[in-house]
Image (cartoon, rainbow, N blue to C red; front, side, top):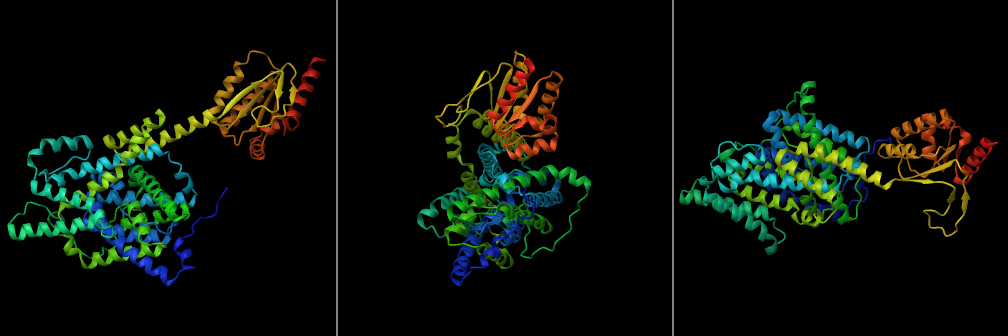
Length: 561
């Protein structure tokens, strides 16, 4: 079992072979990613329920820490659309202080995940669950943008999905067609920009053009019904001083559940982003180091008023596509955002809200993965059911419930499929050693009457222990010897050990011998630690079935004399 801390930041590894050519590539990639990240950081901050500079602060501090300490050479960290729903819900329920505490606790959980080598385990999250809550988040994000996209004059929009749409329909008569036009134009620019030039981010181009358009409409035509960031928020380009977070046992108990949601979602999204990046670059992410870095970022940003941080797939791919190959590009991206924050924040006030709504509408569409959902509908019904349930829970209730129930579903599915892969076969009279092998040499071993052979093929765990017990009880003939063949048992858990102990004890009371065959060293060590080896008897444990049958036949023969 691994116990040593698996923390090896890729930044320091990359410096060993760093060169001037690499630096200039990283510099260019970092500049472009910083520009791409600007509108997204602002939009994610506002949609999460905080001011725009909080989104930028998150991208600056979180992006720097993820790149400096992370286990992936090209990962870009910052706020992402996946967190909008959960962050908004936490703020509505617990306020900004509650969000800071939940984010801090999530950071601690992520660090512990990395320290306990859970990075590889997180990657085994069933794909239907990931697709389900990602699609649910996408639909929920779109729902949060309808007010600004249509320019509706609604004072308080409900947090839950269904009530939100009821309010929208009730106020549909207040649509601001100027705002709607800006939103539609923004979406069109973002969609069409890549066809014209792949070098200029569509979201940035939309923000620049729509900001100029709205400014002209206000200044020269007197059309001031289109809200801008400055109309909603008081923002300043000053890096906030760190402020303390009031954590006690009551707040921990109250916020541990949303903190766990943030941690799990952050781990899944960051490692998914890293996996996608590895597939393109041919690199290999140290997932435990990546979790520790993500955790560190989420521990630090709350002190500056930031929101949760994770790896961002779109920004990471932008980094790769523009030549970024080391964490230096991610650090440059954070520095670019810092310079914009310090010197250009007054211009951010002029950005129209319908334009940001258009940006996030496109983000939601890209997140939805509707093509993936459509193709997965052809999968087994169990997978489709999990996808649909996770999707509905995310949309109708909230992401915390969706992830918690999703994890339970993942465990249940895993247990079910593990149980399905484990077979229990019963043999009497004779045994063909070539059974269930690729061998053509059939060697038949004669088994005396009164000897039963139970072969377990697969993990012997709690999901199969009850089934094994039921099969044993269903055998009508009274046996003198029970051989449990375990050549294909890779591991045995405590429930199976308990059942095996009861079986051996009850068999001894009935004068029935229990023989174990084909026990591998790992399982044998477990049996010895639990005391079952002593209970069975060392002379009743064999490494091959032929020896076990010889022993069983001798016992039956001696019993008949």
